[in-house]
Structure formats: structure tokens, C-alpha cells
Length: 288
Figure 1 (cartoon, rainbow, N blue to C red):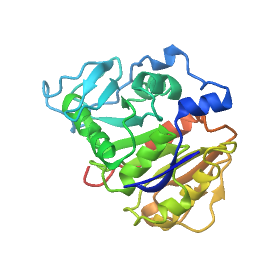
Figure 2 (figure 1 turned 90 degrees about the horizontal axis):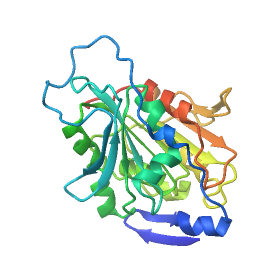
Figure 3 (figure 1 turned 90 degrees about the vertical axis):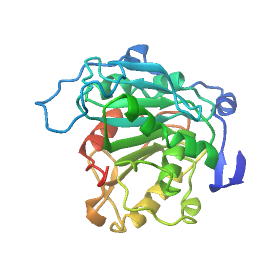
Figure 4 (figure 1 turned 135 degrees about the horizontal axis):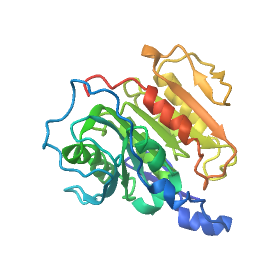
């Protein structure tokens, strides 16, 4: 295991390619059909939207997007995308050394999320130093210039270093606009790492981690405890019927949830329906 100390403070990094060789295994990928966007059954039109012709992003999305800082990303939108309607955006940060195409196959979110009206952006891995994080933080704004996005409903997720990125952008105050909720998976932040940072404003968070993660063992539960303290929740969570631990009595009823599966570090948790519902039910970010 490699240990690094940088602008983020101490955290653990371990490239997945080397980890796969170490484990003599390969990550499970979803079928390619799960990377195909779906149509969305739009509800009756509301008064809030984008002016016709103001957003040029195509229905279904685009694979050739790039920010001025050189961050390449793929956008997936509903196949019947309406450029005058505002859509929630999910940014998926890639694991260490993974590209956006592999990341999309790995998490299997595209078909189900576009079918629920989400637009998704999949980024290439860029590193987790402050320079890279600052550049990744600008992806939502870049997407919103081309697609009609509800900036009060932006969400982050990602696995391993992708989960670390989703966490770090909030903890370091780099996220602009601030996400309405985050769902980091197998992130490389321990409780003692997070304790060296000031708490951000109350943040809805769904922490996902594998019980058999021998790379970051116990990190997820420790991170969830830190978020619960920052969100000023009751000390002890209650166990939900689906096995997740839900913290209660949080400031402004901010959702704070920890879900632990049986997987290893290399395994995406596969709780996609749970994540979609968590994002769908998260309150819009004030001022978004």
C-alpha cells in the first residue's frame, strides 16, 4: 500500500491496475446496454427552464466534451432530452487511472438514470492533487453551458479515487456549484484524515463501502461517522430494513446514510436503485 501526504493531507492511494494484479482478478463490468441512454417520461411542464436555443447539447449526450482546463468527459442525456427543461446532473468521477468509458461500464448508471430524467457526466481520472481537483470542480459548469441543468440539483459519485474526489471537492470547498448530495463509494478517507478538516455546511451524503474491502478497511464507516458529526446528527444510527445505517436528528434533516455491502475494494457496490432514490429525494441545494 502506498501512502501519500499532499495538499489533501494524509490519505491512501493505490492504483486499481496494480491492485487487480495483486488480487489476480478483474473488475466486473455492466453489459454495454447499461451504457445506452433511455427516454424519460417528462411530467407536465413547469415555469422554470432554459430559453429555447440557449443550450446546444444533443439528446442522448456526447462523448467528446472537454473543459478549458483540458478535462475530458462524456455526457449522457435522455434520448428524448428537452433542452428547455432543467435536469438534475450526476457527475461520476473515475477510479485511479480509469477513463470515462471504463468508468461508465463499471458503475452501470446510464440507462437507469437517464430514464429517471438525469443527465450524467463521466470524467477521466485526473489525479487527486489540488490542481486536478480544482479542474474537475468546473465540469458541472461546463455541462450546464451545453445542457439545461438544474444547478440546485447537482450530485457527485465515484468509486475508490473517484469517491475520494467526490468527498474532497466538498471538504476542501472547491465544489461550485455545491452538490445537493454526494454518494462516495470505497473512498480513501479515514476518519482521522477527515478530522483534520473543518466541517463543511450540512451536506446530504450516502457513504457506500464494502465489508471485505482490504485496501481501505473500515474507512467508509469512519467517514460516515465524521459526516454525521458534521451534520450534527444523533450519535447512534438506526438500522434500516435494507441494511443501511441512517443517522437521525441531523441539522435541517440532512440525509446522512451509511450502506455497507459484502464486496471487496474492486467491487462497485451495485446499489444503483438506492443511489437514484437518494438523489431523487435530496432537497435542492439552496442558492443553486
